[in-house]
Image (cartoon, rainbow, N blue to C red; front, side):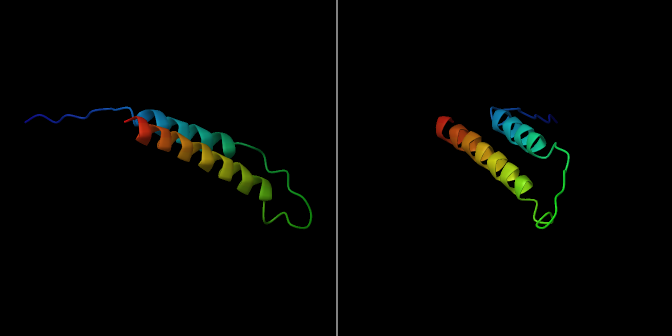
Length: 64
């Protein structure tokens, strides 16, 4: 019995997704007064990481 695991081209957009979210969440929280609980900067960083990830997966889907 053979078990075969193939690593395909999907690893490239997966790596882009992982790296973009690591970079987006790798910062020191400075905090501020007022609306600090909302952390708008973190929301924007994660939204940008999500857009980058979606572009990578869309490109992968269109190519393969």
